[in-house]
Length: 100
Ligand code: SF4
Image 1: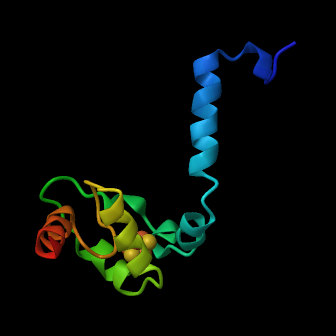
Image 2: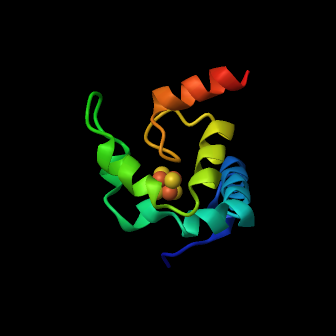
């Protein structure tokens, strides 16, 4: 019989499932992400190719009610790629430097 049977998972796989469960069990982070305006738009705009335009993503961020939470998350998790909280990777780096 085919199907999910936890009995067939190796020990390491059980550990990975535990880590995933922890990641998804953080109500505060889930809460703001559910209100993320970018979730209703084209995600590619937020991860442009090198040298690509960030204007559209930043415009969307301007109207996002969880912009502050998003930026805080990106800074706290050292997110390297994409537009977060209306700032590009370079702008976030500058902001971090200024804060030090
Ligand atoms: S601030 Fe921008 S990147 Fe962050 S959740 Fe809102 S729309 Fe998405």
